[in-house]
Image 1: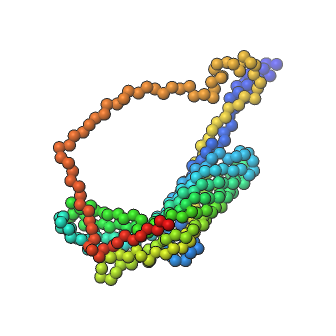
Image 2: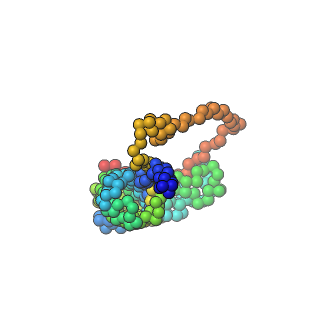
Image 3: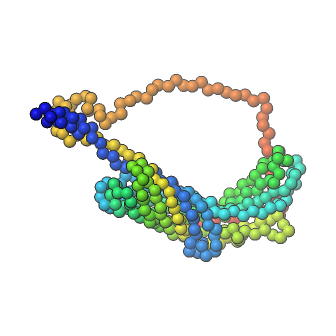
Length: 311
C-alpha cells in the first residue's frame, strides 16, 4: 500500500507539468548558385553566387504525414563583374586629379516571394522531402562603379562614384522548389533544394555585351536585350527551429483547484515593464565645418547612363 501511494504522489506532479514541444516557426538561411535559364541563358547572361532567407509558419496539421506551411522568401545573387582600366578623368575648376580611374560594371539579382510548402512526413521524422510553390517578383540590375586608381593623392576628391541601374528590369516570377530536410536535432535542420522560377520578358545586359570604344573613355551599355528571365537556383543551407511549449493537465481537478489564483495565471505574463528614467542627451560642438569633397567625372566621351527598362 505504501509503494502504491508513493508512486501516485510522484506521478501526479509529473503529469501536471508534462510538456509537449511543437515548431512555432522557423528561419532558414542558404547559399545558392544562380544559373540563368531559357532565353536569358541563351544570351550567356553571367552566372553568380548568392544567399537566401526564408521564414515559415507552424506545420498544419502538426502530426499528419502530409502537412502545410506558409511563409516568405528573399534571395540575392551577385553575378560576375568586368573592369575597364585607364579611364581619363575630366578636368574642371577643382584641384588637378593625379592619375586615372577604373570602371567596374557588374550584374545583380534580387527576388521576393510568397512561399507555400508541402511536407511529406510528420514532424518527428529525421528526413523530410518537400515541395514549395513560389510567387513574387525578381529584379535584374546592371550597375557601374567609377573609382580613382590613386585616391591617396587626391584627398579633395571622392574616391568612388557609383551609378546604379544602368539597365534595370523588374518582372513577376512564379515557380517552385523541390528539396529535402534532414533534422540534426530539435533546433537545427540541414536543407538541400533546387528552385526554378519563370519570368516575363525584361531588359537584361550580359557583361560580354558591354563595350568600350577603341581609343576612348566611353563605355557602351546599349546592347541590352529583352528576353524571358527564367532562373535556376541550386541551394544548400540550414534551418533554425523555434518552439512553443504547451502545458497540459490530464487529471480532472476539482472546482476549488480550478479557481485557485496561482493556477489561473499560469498562461499569462504578469510582469510589468520597469520604469526608466529619460537619459540626458549630450550635445557636441565643433569649431569648424568639414569641407565637402568634390566629385570625380569622366571626360566628355566617358560612360553614359543608358535608359532603364521600367516597362
